[in-house]
Length: 252
Image: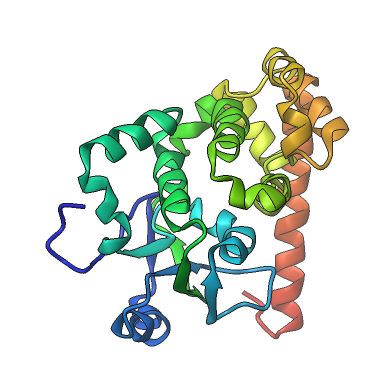
């Protein structure tokens, strides 16, 4: 809000972007004074360079991209209402569970039921610290289950039709109930049988996971066995990538 520039781009998550692609695929929209531009390294929809004018459609199709800190470049004017101390205090209290999601809640509320001019572009994004473990692993279910459900429940009612769809889509695309993240979360202490039961009793596991039975097994099985499944998965993945390279003539 206090930036002297017309656009703000919150960056983080230990990632860097291909700025040549930003110049080619994002800056043209900024120069046309779009309200915001969303970026990600891939999409399961055919929406590269798609222009959005409906906040509901953008929410449904691009929410999970926006969970990346750095996934949206905002026009500063979007947040101009927050200069009113009462409005700022209202939103700060409304979205009080998780700083990583709170700004998204405020953002989506501010554009609800308004005409927008926005874009989505696929650009190359790379990890700066490949082996760095996300800080949220220690609070795995708290963040990606409780905090995410809380965010959806607080959002403006204009998004009601898509909220439950979006919740499951985030988990499905990011693979949050699959062996890779489950093993890492178990090691970090953010996932256990006790924690699974706690959030399951609150009805939140049902809302986010598309394979609750598998998720329960990964949460409660002996961690040594889970590590074996994790290692086999990595071995098969590496073998698959090796075969693909060989088929393309790369023998290295």
